Amino acid sequence: MEISRPAMEVVTAATTALIGAVVCYGSLQNGIEWADGGPQPGYFPFYVGCLIMLGSAATALQALMRREAGSAPFLDGERLRTVAAFFLPIVGFALISGFLGLYIGMGIYVFYAMWTAAKFRPHVALLIALLVVAVNFIIFEELFMVPLLKGPVLNHFGIY
Image 1 (spheres, rainbow, N blue to C red):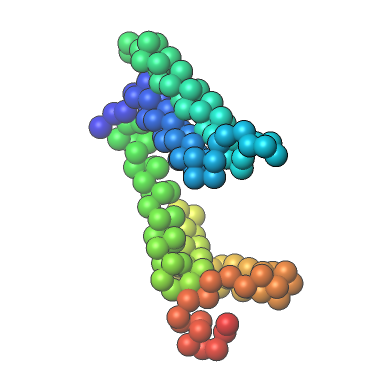
Image 2: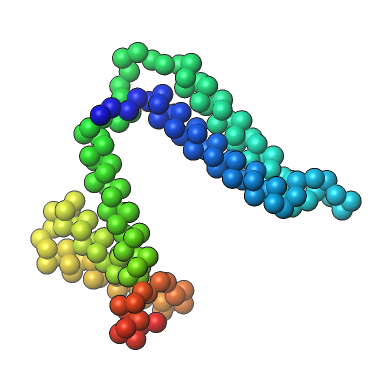
């Protein structure tokens, strides 16, 4: 599987255009007209969203007009495996954190990264993961007093 650079530029332009459209839609909910007291809350964000969509259209047009024959691919099979090896564990981290809490998700992610990517022995990776979780818990919960998502496991042990 190979993805060309122009194709990726078009996908990126479509994504940013969608973001611009969301900004415009949200602005319409708040009003985009000029009222007696000045602009309504959505006035300026609406035009920023329009500029984002205009820039996205220009980027897509540029990418389509500048097709280079024989250029290096943006993403091939080898690069895709590297991206997946980085991206999929982060998705797993987000899913685990949503269900079991941030600290457990963090511990599992750090353990996995240390064990597979950094090639640490499992007991060393586990020790590093526990240390990272403990340091983050102290920093956020104790020093900054910012409670992070604990999840049902830590709540079960009375850590709120």
